[in-house]
Length: 168
Image (cartoon, rainbow, N blue to C red):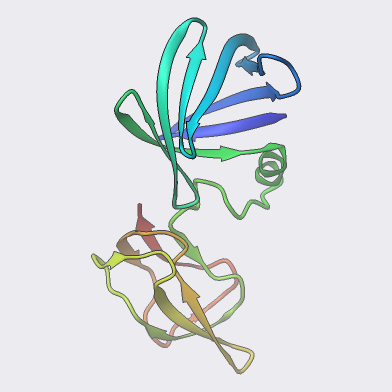
């Protein structure tokens, strides 16, 4: 199965064949000799081409915080389905949109619960959008700092409008 990994601004495509022993991995069309052993629910010992690495992996806002030999980076992984959805402009979980709050329906901004600079927790109430005579409450998909709000109370917005951005 093919995967696309985003680490910072770098994108790396790789392919995994889990049914081989050891697991087959192709990185940029080059086969990599890899052995991975799970040590605990979120820690792993990884041997890549004879080099040993200790990894700790925890979920982090739609991606993962990966600590390798005491250095932590944010990693976002897409499988073949996610890659295809991105290719056709239909992605809803791309790391490019992580932290961007975009409305899926047109409506009226009825209430804002946050301000730029606020510390935001995952699932925190952000705003209410009135649409089709209903109030729709939007919550944060990630934790972080609210970097900007692009609307104000009373604004009418269209489907796909960027409402606010949260820096993770």
